Amino acid sequence: MSLVDLDRPDDERIVLAEVVVHLREIDCRSIDDQRQLAAAWLQVHRSDAAVLDVLEPAARQAYQDVVDAPRRNGVLGRTWSVGSALRTGSAHLHVAVHRRLMLLHLVLNETAPELADGLA
Image (tube, rainbow, N blue to C red):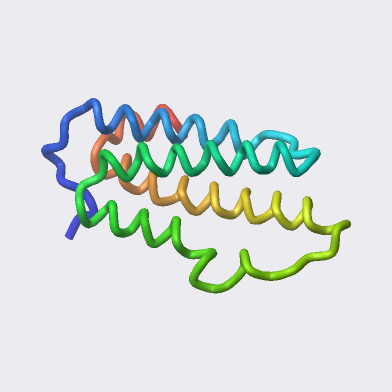
């Protein structure tokens, strides 16, 4: 069974491709302070909203599971030393972005292989 409905309009696939490009841009940033980290997370959450808006139910649930993963295993609730907080926060950001990208690539490979190939 596929995660996606193959009869979806092209516009929704384009939204996913644009989010992939945006998440890659976020992943390539140098995070030098907490303000930049917070801004990057805000953009990730905005991207999540755009993706969840266009996915069909099965793929939406899979993506929501990826979004919710850090909260389930308690990673965000830990207390870190001041010196490692930025490095740790940046690492969590990169892992979160990569998990989202993996799922989005799976969806695009199934629905729009021509877009997925162009993003590879």
